[in-house]
Length: 291
Image (cartoon, rainbow, N blue to C red; front, top):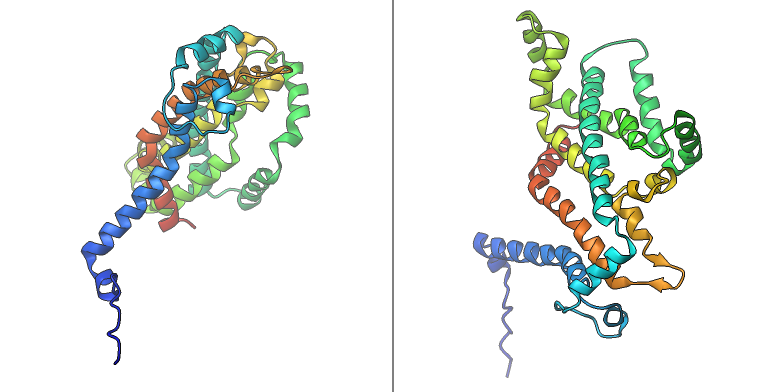
């Protein structure tokens, strides 16, 4: 007697059904989203537990009752914590504005003007991206000391004028997404060169500028090595440098460290959530029209 074939619960015809495929796709995306968000959730959960519970063998997956104690311990060790949060914002916000403006201006020049040694200058600029920033740390510190900038925020804001990646990013977008005929028409109408940049190029390149702004802000907010080398007064530390002071010779209060890092993570999450659309638009535009 021959056995009847066992039917496959998910047949090829079922997988070809648009409704089933959409359900499977959204289910997969939901699982991946949960896996992506889980580290942030776990960080906030651990911030509510004591160091002993965190170091124990049992993973803590639910909120505890040590939030206030961890916060008091953190403030006891680093009483300038909220000042360091303000310092991180003072570095991140102007750096973002300066980087986006001058990167868009440089990208506009490389995209729409013809001048001597244009391609050579562009490739030299790109070559600087291959040099690790740590190699220039000592000369940078010597230069900042010579200029008297070893405690203010200028060492992080002024160099943001020359962002090689920012110029490259904006140049690629402007050259591919904005037709040259649009600028020719603006010249005929009497628009100035800067007016073409401000009124035409920058508004149209808003998706790329938004994506650059978000990544620049996050990088400035998380600045650690530069402030660690340059800043001499604890009142001028960024939050990353301030939290590093919790790692003492007698051990680390993990609960206090995690409550501080959790507080510092919230602004980054807000910026990323509200600016996610800009990042997607910028990346999609670069992928579809990039050269």
